[in-house]
Image 1 (cartoon, rainbow, N blue to C red):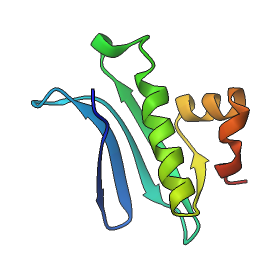
Image 2: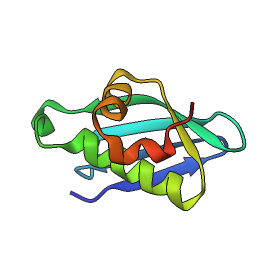
Image 3: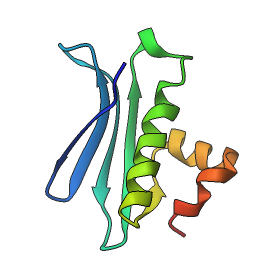
Length: 94
């Protein structure tokens, strides 16, 4: 399933959709000039255990690296993933 991105002023979402509704999504808001705050993750039961949340976070990490931004994790899933996965900590806002 393809990951899509939608952005508007000061906020954004990465998501996986079945064409009718989002089956997984992760949202962020701009926290400042150099960082974003990832504040919400949702994964439909049909995608649980398939790594959908991690794929969404990896896409946001890629976006942050491309734009030279840091990520302040707020939602519990993203907080836990940053604690577990050392290779994404280069974009962690501290």
